[in-house]
Length: 264
Image (cartoon, rainbow, N blue to C red; front, side):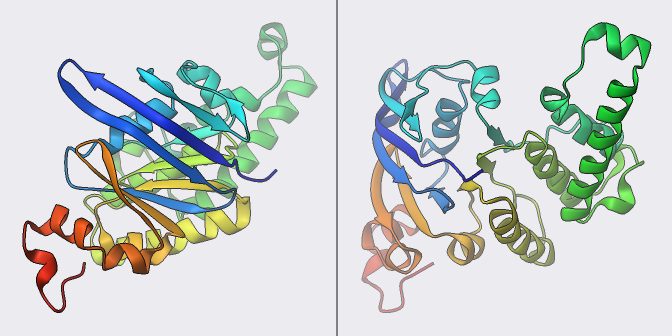
């Protein structure tokens, strides 16, 4: 199954007098890695929360392959094949790495309550297949050797990768990654970059990325949209965004774009 083609049209969200997202429109083609960047407070995470049903937009629309999903609840959005990670790590710290993945797969295990209690052969087979797939996902993110370890005891970068594996357990067609490289050292970030590319290739997903690490953004993105104060100030290819005077000014301040070598 291919990744979703995603479209936002005039998406708007206010909190009191604060315009968090202001008439944002963009189109993301199936299978793209598309980055949303901008200074702190630009509205990036609010944009993600609109996509995943945590917030309902004040106006505008969101479509997945042409299907209007505007304002659907988070569970209905997830059921359509939209997975995400969060800016702050949200693994189940008291559970093992394997159990974290299995929780993400619960919606795909088809068995009745009675069959689960009676441990019917069908239920046992479903659970075995789920565990095999969970181990495959842990291997994909380099954590197969940590399967039986308590998630809260994993290193920071490992917990980040575990969150991505858990999101993949939903079998998504659209994966939203909210600052996955936050707190990682350069070696961990380089590993993450290759992992994101591999996920896109192996699963055919559409990926939307929020990230402050510009090296990662420029290396993995097919296209980039830049937000400032909730509005789009630039969209385009990485090479175009890198040299865009409005983007440089938003990140580095007035006059920064006039320098000969001004770029990220």
